[in-house]
Image (cartoon, rainbow, N blue to C red; front, side, top):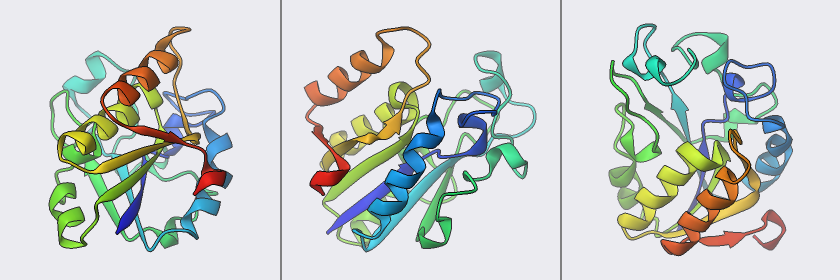
Length: 179
């Protein structure tokens, strides 16, 4: 069984948001189209408290129950089977969807007999990368859907370096048209 995992496709990570990935909204139509190809669709959200040590490193973003923490308005979120909330404590946590505190992603995947995961979302060099590496560490065949991820791109080589790290660890790069 395979699952689509949408990482942090939230308003604060899209243009106009507090920690926007350039052109982050360009991946929304790609992900919406992908949803029709999967029986199991999962998503993660940053879900930070107002006062978090996480904000010593990053601008305040994705504070729970705020518009910035909501999914991008064009994402067909009614098709999502389960949302995994991460970064919920007052500490610097929550990069990987496997760090969710409301549900255990690994247990959920195992219960649903998932052995392949297709990772999409924001940001390539942070939360996407960590989710991919954690999926690989747990033994899932892991694909990075290259036209359905977007980086913050703080440095010019950050995204290529992250992609290289994911592929070196065993992830497979795939275009949405190949699925």
